[in-house]
Image 1 (cartoon, one colour):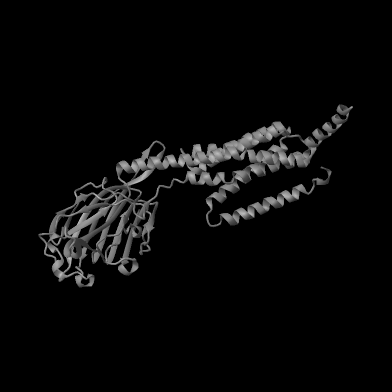
Image 2 (cartoon, rainbow, N blue to C red):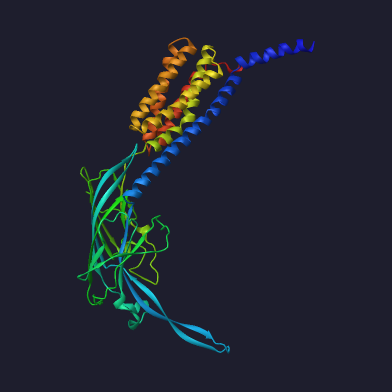
Length: 458
């Protein structure tokens, strides 16, 4: 008797499950959430491929020459200072003696002129590429010795005959010729000096180069001490200079067309960009930067104040693909909503498995997009992936709905949706505005179509 009473109740539940709009909405919603799992896996794949690209670019840069940052030249002047040291002998008698210590005064140039010509090229490995370059740079200017009385250093304690010129760069491997400086008419070669490895605030590790003692040069504050040095360096991605001169003037030119200017200072000439490349000019005064012309005892890392040029390679398929996947939930949700409305209004049954197949087809769009864009432009990849998925889902819809009317409408809707998302991806400043207007129109359309559904009967 109990089995007889329970069977009609079971039939009513099955009937409700098959025909209830509420149950159908719940199932479609659950399928949408389930499809987020493969969508997240695609996002991880994109990040993995982007990381692989950066790894290959790093390997190319490491072999050719890394980013070049130039800090210097700087005049390094030693001096003696004395401190009192307390000494206790065996009889526990206390005495005080004066102990001499060597410290250094670091002096920046009065004028620094930078003239750099950069010849970039593309280096490829497999499907990845990056910009490398050979730079020819001339650094010239002069030093004006400071008034040591301002530093509270007695004149007789300064070891003028042991002064040196130091120079720091982030890229020793790419240096093509022996580094030397013509200082006050005399030539001095730089040699490398080991120092504790570490990253600067700008994430650049600098290597110290030091000249021999300037024994042949008479240092005097009465006249400017002229210098000139040339650099020929293989580098990659970026070239930058620290404005150590009281007046720093720089001129960097190249035939690279997709460059950007980096750092704390921008070029002042309005005609810096042209169809042939760029010719940028800077003029930086000591008042423009937050550090003085001399440092006593320690020389801080000032690369965070560097300026320069980044030689960009327009490879943004990973960034655009990742942005496209962020709209994956919207694409799947709106597509399922479209099939849900067709099913509800036309009374044509659509099985949850068929919803799942359609959703997986939508996820496959992003896999096709990233794989094709690695070998072609993002636009071509987007067109191929979009057309393929739209045709596949439209033909599959024909087998489900048994008519061409709805599949054609679905194909046109998907075409409009993918076009709308592509426009949003390309936009930057107006992406939010266009996206909000588009979603408003979609919501209005859904409200208009769903007004014919009798929600009270389910």
